Length: 329
Image 1: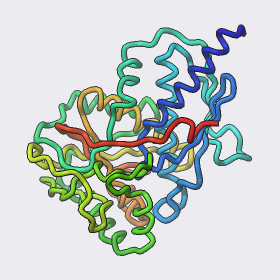
Image 2: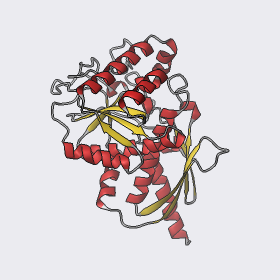
Image 3: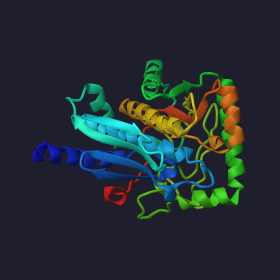
Image 4: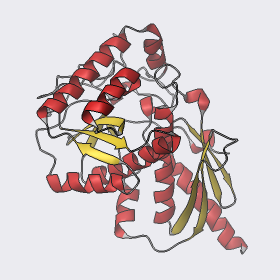
């Protein structure tokens, strides 16, 4: 390999990692680190950013890293390279989630360019949606996008099932808000106005006074904890629930979690390209007994990995990310 080609591959690897930083993560913990050596990218979980109270097994941490892995793959393909990936390549190194080798590829297709353009544009939503319904053809496409990565996106069409998920979310939120350890862990990732930190949920990332959503209300996280933080609610938004959906996988081991993150991010990027925003509600999935209830009664035995609402908004919330130098060696 000549020097020019090697330098191009090394630069592509660094660019791909920069794109990975924009992946969604639980409480914007950004629980990943990357190693770049020549033509190889290593994705590692960062245990210091793991939620030890609400995510002791590291399921949500691994899903977050899976979303970052999908960004790496899309970024490389958009640059004309082919990612050769191995998930969990070394059983002796459990924090090493994947390696990606950068190989010469081909000119990216239109769909790859579409997804790549949304990597830095996509945002997590934390309130209600407009009354504009999500078109069925778009929902069908999102189901296909998730399936391409081994995930199963289940739109919840039954009002009864949506009401059950909303009730379980509210119950979990109430229980967690009374648990001192849960509260302290959440506070660690809540950023006050003016904070210079580049992780966690900024005060401008959620409304000051969350309006109830209709027809079902999904309890939001309480990042402000009694402070007057947040952004003013947008009166142009009708506070619609939007379309409720579940992301599931057939299995429930670490590889399933990683693939769930890849499936989630692929459908999120496609949704963003068509102006669709997504709100996450993982409280019930952080309580084993409620997660098992959802698996048995709402997921046909598959493992629930994410509860979400999809809809259209007018203005999107802010987000922050760490610098590449903070996560890459």
